[in-house]
Length: 266
Image 1 (spheres, rainbow, N blue to C red):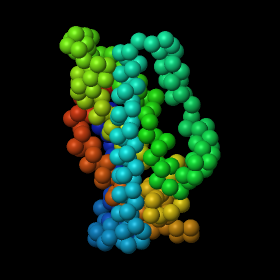
Image 2 (cartoon, rainbow, N blue to C red; image 1 turned 135 degrees about the vertical axis):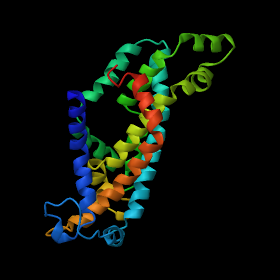
Image 3 (cartoon, rainbow, N blue to C red; image 1 turned 180 degrees about the horizontal axis):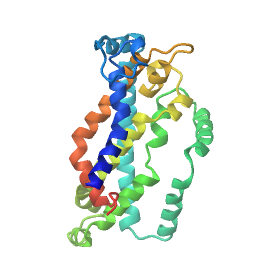
Image 4 (cartoon, rainbow, N blue to C red; image 1 turned 90 degrees about the vertical axis):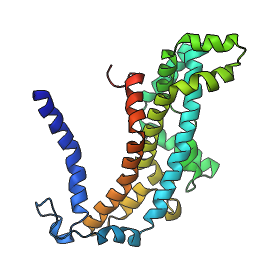
């Protein structure tokens, strides 16, 4: 009983801010500070005003495009690297993997300035390339996730394919990769959420509204002297909705992948 009470309390702490924002998105300016959860008269027009005040639809499409490109790149290159570190034998493999894994300990803020200087040298500042290319070619976390999953697959699958004359690429692409679908789904969902919620990198690299992300649009709704909080909360709900849709579609495979990859505490 105590466990269920604790779980309910934790769930409420996570959901309360979202429910409060949902309620606030339907209130008037004068009601936003009142300690009432339900609005007296729901103002559904707040959602329409969001799109009138800024090109949020275009920003959502921009963010979805960036997230789609980065997710595709992460899934492909992390699966390749994970297969190489798990199945291929070459000199210095374990040392190289540990060094690559060690990059997870480097704070993101440490690499922001070097990445910005590199983007400026390439002429990619304030262009979509700056949002896509840096995250396109895999990550240490994604490589680690895929390596652990590849290592858990039976060696007999690979041996049987090699006996049948399959090449290394065919073993990876046709034999082993289809069995890693749960891990691929976990990596895809986590990458999509990370790119969708990213704020620091777009803030540094993007100035134009026509290529801005949804998180930048949310911040730009805050006025210098006065902020319309119901409109801001309505925009937050609009930005949150695609994440809920993605998770609802991928929920079964995502939970299965978490359990099978060992990230669930097992």
